[in-house]
Amino acid sequence: VLKPQRRCTHCGREGHTEQRCWHAHPHLKPAYRREGRQQEEPKEAGATLNSAESKYYVLFDSGNLRTSLCSSEVAVGRMRRKAEEVWLVGFQGTLTAASEVVDLPLSWKGRELGIVQCYVVPECPYDVIMAKEKMKELGAILNTGRDEVYIPKVGRIPFERTKTQTTQGVNAINNKSR
Image 1 (cartoon, rainbow, N blue to C red):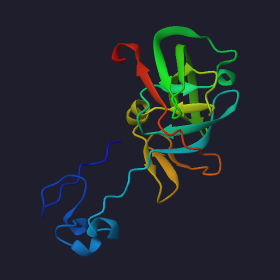
Image 2: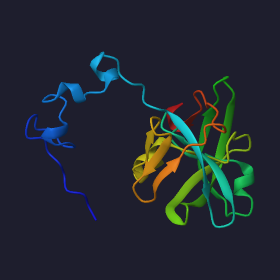
Image 3: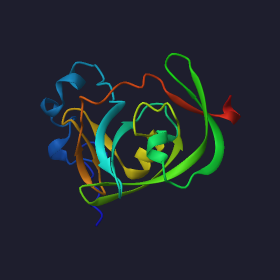
Image 4: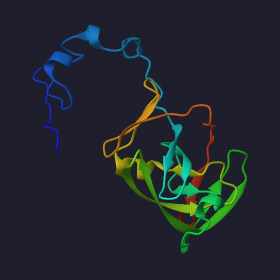
């Protein structure tokens, strides 16, 4: 079921109605926007998701990471396939190459999220790091105000902040762009 598109009759933009328009009603604008500061977009947050046989701590990374990653432990028993080699640059400048991928089906409370194709990285600090592109594909939105990630297919997934560590600049770089 698709939601009908809302268009503001005051400013003409989509996504809200005139009753919620900041141009028509400046007092509705959040304080951080009124003061001229842009709220920093959250870059990462984590939650525990399920696969058919296990639970995995998944870091949702909306930063620079271009390919999803998983640890060697997550890949055990899964069919590995060769893929284009990528280089991972850690925040301390360490380089790691990865060239095998696995498909990891994930779900949240019984609702299927889909299959995430992950590069297998032995030193991966999390079970799974979901890259920005996969998050876009799923429609995932990080909401630090509510401490959740929202994915239309499955709903709201609460963050587990105690497990979240910063990846501080872990990037997947294709060989072609080196």
